Amino acid sequence: QVQLVESGGGSVQAGGSLRLSCAASGITISSYYMGWFRQAPGKEREGVATIDTYGRTNYADSVKGRFTISKDNAKNTLYLQMSSLKPEDTAMYYCAADGRFKPWVGLDVADFTHWGQGTQVTVSS
Image (cartoon, rainbow, N blue to C red):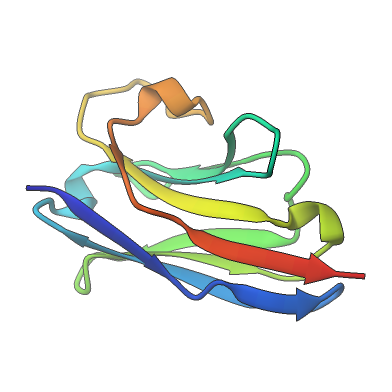
């Protein structure tokens, strides 16, 4: 049974930083495509950052230069380092995983099968 458990969310002021973690069980993340997605109230879930099995990354334009996705295969944990946070980054953040082969991993929600429960990030101005 695949479990993805996010942590690290919270409330910060604009310009601040947070690091999200996603502890995985039931899968070996080194063999999976992993990603972070977010959903703000009244909006659709959107891709934030993804990382493939080779460590290649992909970022939404809105977070490029501010967020960094990484993973620790030994800890089976995915991270999202978020800096220079803005009020528009406020959302529930979800960790996702998928084991199906992909020639390239983008930011499409439909490309991911397994999802965590989410962790809330609130950025105040």
